[in-house]
Image (cartoon, rainbow, N blue to C red; front, side, top):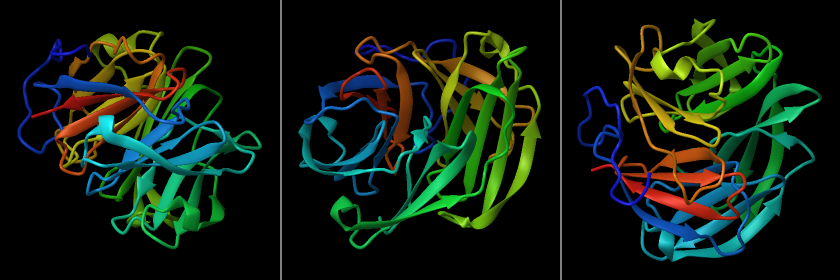
Length: 282
């Protein structure tokens, strides 16, 4: 979305704190210090920490003005194990001492869970628990999304042959802790909605709004699609309600995250060398 550009092709809905894109306006674009390409991003609940994970590292930034990405200052980074990282948002628990993200290991998709001795302080990180393979088939693209409230993990897979789009929603047995197990609650064997049916849509990340009634799927190097859900975290019968224009300043958009109050949306790309766009939603 360019400065002042609104969501197009919308279908109603919205509301304060809902995470709706109907009135979205880009307010800032910045290049992070010690820039890297972004595979996943996260902002802390108080808006003072911004995290990026890239091909082989997690990076930590301080925001001197809460939620303002233009005030980011590099703090630290830690190298991850030799996994192939998936396009995945990063999930922290409310204390900032536990995080999870998705990887590929030995040809299967896994979740890595790590702990921190101090909130959002990567210098205190320890452990690297690799949790069981996520459901998948032979895929052309694969996206993983954690809900901000820590209750669900979602996966989207697109096959090489026929571009079948498989969407699964799982409830975590213990919020913010996938190692405690999860239960699949919804499965759609071929998720197709309006313009989202085109073969060119390669999903890289999924998100939900604050109450789970809106679902977002980020297209690789393209728009962020929005869908209205009749009930929380249930994509069955989802209604396509619009998409954003692509963000010219971001090369190969692939990762998004909301602030805790859903006032801001942040977008990064895997070829953007640290460029992050900040979108105001209300």
